[in-house]
Length: 299
Image (cartoon, rainbow, N blue to C red; front, side):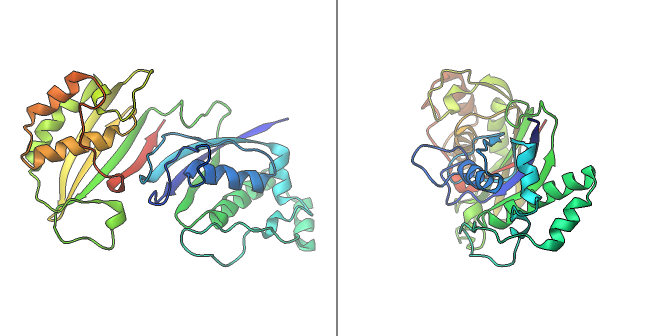
């Protein structure tokens, strides 16, 4: 049986979710939502593999994922009598609500159309129906921005070469009520030149065990290619992290310590000392999840 390998670009607001990775007894995960919907749409068990396991409350604009499905199951999605061509209908159940309901029977016009499709047109119909179905029935805080067929060897997690995370901090003591779910409402001025000095120690290949939220058996060596810290406007400091991969809580722990430097409570040289300890708990100031967004994954 031929398997079709799909690559997805996914966006989500992570506020109400327990992170990307599905967990036993936990309903609200991004991976879990996607797998449940795909399994129902395609009438077969689907496993979705994400490029990164974002923490609870963390957002994404460029999360990547992949999954495989039998070609026959895709064919059923648009087949006469399968009822899947009516999956896309108007209406919404509101923000944060799941919208899956049973489709209605397909029309006679649709059956006749499918008989005349060329193989390339049928593939396009399958892809288009699956893409639109996902976006219609996913909760309003999850979206599939792109869905394409990938090579058989593509795997969203194992082939990822680099990632870009962005952290946003509001320094104005007045809360930004519109964007409050997407930033750290810190409320104090920060010296970004001191933060840049502290960040220098984190760039390069290091053992980041001190900046890891879990005690891992696997290697904690990672390469951070660059960290950019900018004053986006009078009230917003933005930290952009680029690297080959990031450990659990790593970006949030680095941000937390750099904010301490920017606030004058730690010296820039302290960051080197924390890094050199190479043990969990050395970095103990973790920035809130709300300010962090996975922006891009590269292959």
